[in-house]
Image 1 (cartoon, rainbow, N blue to C red):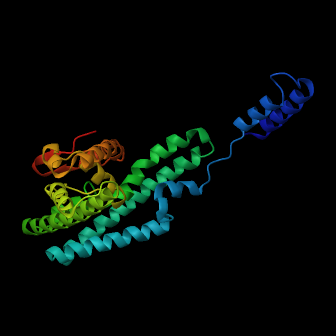
Image 2 (tube, one colour; image 1 turned 120 degrees about the horizontal axis):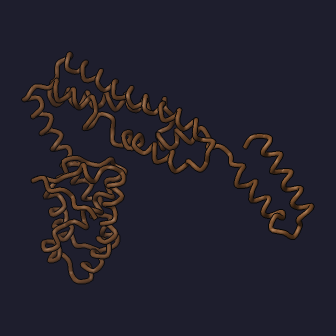
Length: 280
């Protein structure tokens, strides 16, 4: 609040309390006026907390992304035996993705600095930063990135087939691990026999998604996938008590579809034969 308005508000309090002690313009009304008008600015550090979450500041995230790029490069090199020229081109593309990300971060930081004195804009600021958060969480070198585009253009046909097959196997292993964890969580609410767990795992892993969500969202996807299983095949596996409990959990699990969609993941995930995950 400008200084002259602060003096005005203070004068209003004194006048109100002195002249109108029992009226609607008494002490409480005047104090409410000042409390509503005098709002501290959003702390500058809140920007990094929103964008980088628990990863630290910009320097820490830059180092983390550089490390992730080198890990991705070494993974590709081991799988397809790429040439030095191919690796150099891919590294430049990855560095370009990192630069583009931080260019976007700094642009949003400028907007934040201009708007942080208006606490009424907190929700708008947070919503504006969500795409940046999502990009960082999902990974900078995935589908749609400069790195991925250069990867497709640089690798030969045989190299691409090698890489796709290896990544499919890696994705299948991760999905199986996630399903096992989800079933273990399920048994905390619904005791299952070894045979039931094995049969449920078989149902869950018949189809591997074309891509996986970040690790922190994986359990949400598993819970949601439980709710989408073929009931005609699932029902014979469970007794009446188990089935009733599973149906109750499934209703909650279905709600995670809306959450995953809000985070921008639901529409990107499909299973073999182009069978999309159904929306809740």
